[in-house]
Amino acid sequence: MDKDRRYDVVIIGAGPAGLTAALYAGRARVKTVVLERGAPGGQLLNTEAIEDYPGFDHITGPELAQRMADQAVKFGVDLETARVTGIHRRGDTQVVQTEDGEYVADYVILTAGGEPLKLGIPGESEFQGRGVSQCAVCDGAFFKEEEVAVVGGGDAALEEGVFLTRFAKKVYIIHRREQFRAQAILVEAARKHPKVELITNTIVTEVKGEDGQVKGITLKDVVTGETRPLKVTGLFVFIGFQPNVQFFDHREHVEHDPLGFLVTDSTMQTSLPGVYAAGDVRSQLTRQITTAVGDATTAAIDAVKKLEAKKHEPTPVPVDLYG
Image (cartoon, rainbow, N blue to C red; front, top):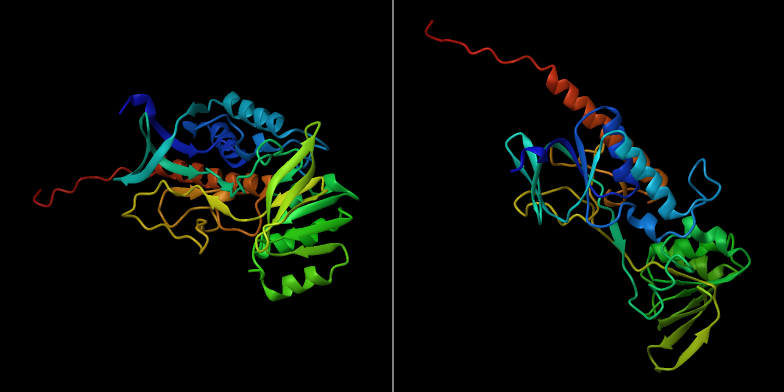
């Protein structure tokens, strides 16, 4: 192992949670590195406009990401491009394996986020952040008095669909099956809402737009095979979210919820000593920039406190039993 790859804290993922953890660790003057497989920012890079982050009436995702990264680096944090392949324990330290070698640290803060599952249809990626979204709370206010579509059949799709009625004048909730998987009470609430129309046995096959904005989608009836256009200016996709938690050694069990999100204590530590989780990888009520930042602040401060405690531990004195 290269000597310069021994750190106090290794942070995996440079989204809002990772960059916040880096800021607090850097300010505490502990040796910290952030490992990110791509450009810093995580899901912020796919967000056109942010209006729900305190202190900013309006800021683009990439701009906020750059500000966060610059601030962390200013406090001496190393920001490196690396693809992490594993995490395991070696004695009292954590080993983070990458395609380019390993990093060793006292503590690891996992902020690798996750990926919303996508439909994989033409136009979806092209109009991401320009009408296509996976967060009604984040983007719903951009669609005041407009017509939007929601895709999905679970609790999230129904809850977010009804939430969007606060802004949109019409919300279509589209599900590929006849029956929704969501709780009956959520389905009933959506069915009774005057602004909501439920469309079943139907899939979205294409997203269409003009001048960089969504203008409509194409629907296909899975029973008859017939297709038809639907004019909407927004498409919200809620078909699942996959947390990036695939790094752990298969011999070590990490506590997680039924969906795979990591369970933590109040300090954000996972069931593995020395490994924290913050942001979208953690089991929690909601996934917002603000919650990611809060998680990461707690994790970093706790790790720093533990590092300080280690420095002041008394050195064991050998006992000569025969002296």
